[in-house]
Length: 353
Ligand SMILES: *Cc1c(COP(=O)(O)O)cnc(C)c1O
Image 1 (cartoon, protein in one colour):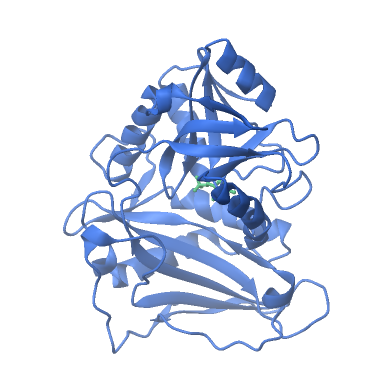
Image 2: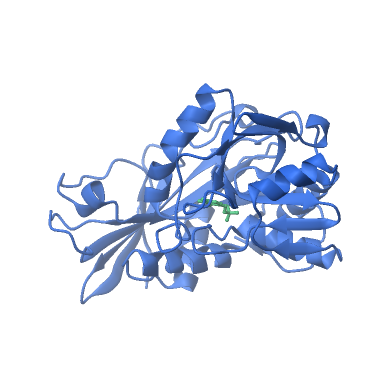
């Protein structure tokens, strides 16, 4: 399929790369492609970023048939921009499609479209240390219809925008509230799909935790509320004795690409990493025995987010004396080193735009 390109006549001023936030500035162009039953995906185009007119009856507004992805483009020189494992994102997008009754996209074509969009908006990839261009592909149901069924038409859209360094003054440990009331997902639900609805489900607990002075919640399983699942919108790792544990993918956990990359790196380093069920009780017992060394979240936005404190049923524990754990720092340095091409890339994770 040929991607039609319509360039903007009103390019926007670029923001100061030293003062970027996250998710509030968008580049000049966006990619859109249509789906119609019987016709498949068609009419791929890159057009100026801007409002899209939809009827208020389109299905996504009412029944939430919507999925997304998130990845970043990194500037490694004046001329060169790279992506980190975009094939994994597109594979996951299609898995989310399957769960949400959304038609699959051609993964190679989607990557080509993404690269073309980034090439056109290359000047939007910021150059200050730690900054990047955030890429948000998403698919929404667009039938103007109020009956409940999968839509017959969709839009696949990619928008991008420059984002700042997540950590301006080094890796910052965060305070985490262990959530025993609300749940994010259950096996059989949408937890392992990157569905917008999972985020809607998570807002309340997040708001309550914020009011109590915590940055994020640690989600427990939705059935027994015993087993650790994720932290905020990140996967989670705990270092207990000489074992590095992350919850196994059980159907309610989102299979993070940062999670997968960390597991692969840890194995490559010859460390003892286990994907298994991990109860919050075990974590507290490990702490009491002096075995809990560190814990961290993993995700595209922050890469590694060290956990400094946990609070479960009013019992607070401090991890690594509230400092950054050794392994958190090492994984962060290695992953960002690979992403910005300042370190070797033995797994071929990085691809040129
Ligand atoms: C996107 C996401 C993650 C992290 O995935 P990455 O591919 O590492 O960015 C973890 N948990 C949830 C719920 C997510 O939506």
